[in-house]
Image 1: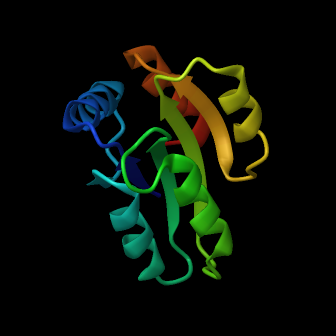
Image 2: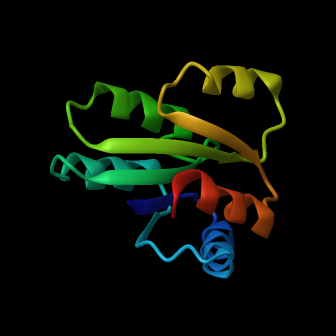
Length: 125
């Protein structure tokens, strides 16, 4: 399983990578600063690939929600689970996240080493 990080803030991506390292998650990590690039990347992928994506919902250009909608419209046979990473504390965002089958968790920034350690066990990373 490859890990995809999508956030417009490079500091958040760096922090995620460092916390994964400390949690002992050594899977390949691919990062993107916008939704357009991750859609392009996934549209070129072959079947059989599995990904765990950490997706920010509030980004310029394509928002995380728009990325999810575009993914739903893709006819690609790859496995993709999504963890929402956001600074939003709005109940509406949590409720909306439940309408997407790919979303397996909803994390509000800031996150911690314990979040990633728990993730390692949950997804056998």
